[in-house]
View 1: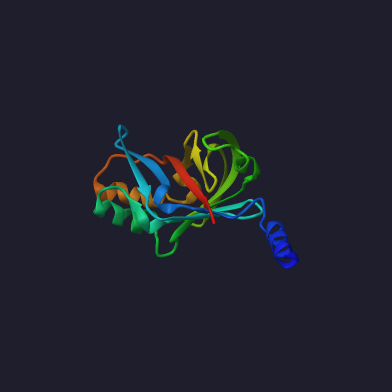
View 2 (view 1 turned 30 degrees about the vertical axis):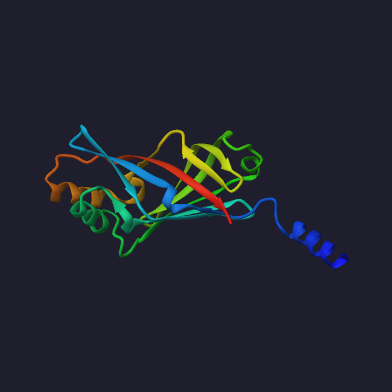
Length: 191
């Protein structure tokens, strides 16, 4: 009996209050808007994301650039090769430090607004942004983070202007906007 009590006590000590959280790729979405010829905007997304929040709150998100999905396979292939250059830069990463304790203490359905500094590395270049986010505790094992406002990325910050120009020329467009709004719905599950 003492051994059973000791094992149960040690388990409660070993299990951290702040467990690891992993991104649920199937339920998450990372989308962006492109605008061409000044007045035609379209929503696109990335289909493969990997992410985790560690015990210490270190948050990482990896975006597989080959998973870009625009609804047009020829355009997807052109974006992979001409814009993202996936042979050299197959992934984009986002890193941040998130204090997940306030989220873990929320009741199911409760929400918390966050202003979170994050670093995006794309095409070999890094930029820091402050993201306005809304965290929602879904249940004991899941929480969701959504962007309250899109992050607006500038192609020039990531040396993507040459690729945009190549896309514009090959598609016969007069213009492609260098500013790209990005939004996210990310669901994390405790394991």
